[in-house]
Image 1: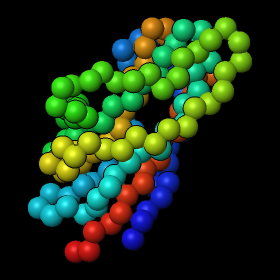
Image 2 (image 1 turned 30 degrees about the vertical axis):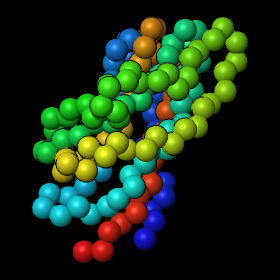
Image 3 (image 1 turned 60 degrees about the vertical axis):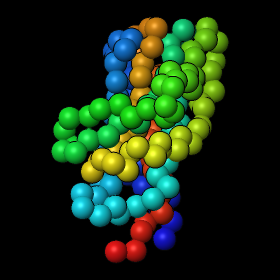
Image 4 (image 1 turned 180 degrees about the horizontal axis):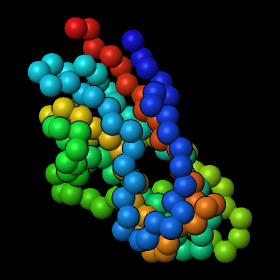
Amino acid sequence: MIKADVLQTSGTLDTLIATSVVGGPTVPIGNDRRKLDRLAAKLIVLAETDTLTISAKWQGSNDAATWIDILHEPQNPAAVVLATGTAGADTAVTKVLPAPPAIYSCAFARVALIVGVATGAVGDTYTFSYFWRTLDT
């Protein structure tokens, strides 16, 4: 069964300085037996602050408390900027970010946003949600 827009959460990047990380909701992958497949995150981000950048990355955990970055490719590419604030009015950006295969070696997963260049303000917003296919148990 396909699950869509699960664990939706929204917020603001107000007062978050460059290099701050905002973790999304935790997705239980399964300890002994994987519960889901084809995990992806839907991100809607709006960078209104001039020069502010918003990037995303996947993180995994075995205890839902200590998170490690999960790389997308063996050559370790950098996170791609999803949105950059300009001096004028900006438009929200919607992207779907598929989970890398290594995420399934963890008991828990989440997508996280990285604030770059400037300090966030009230107009800098985000919404997380997830999509996945449940596996028969």
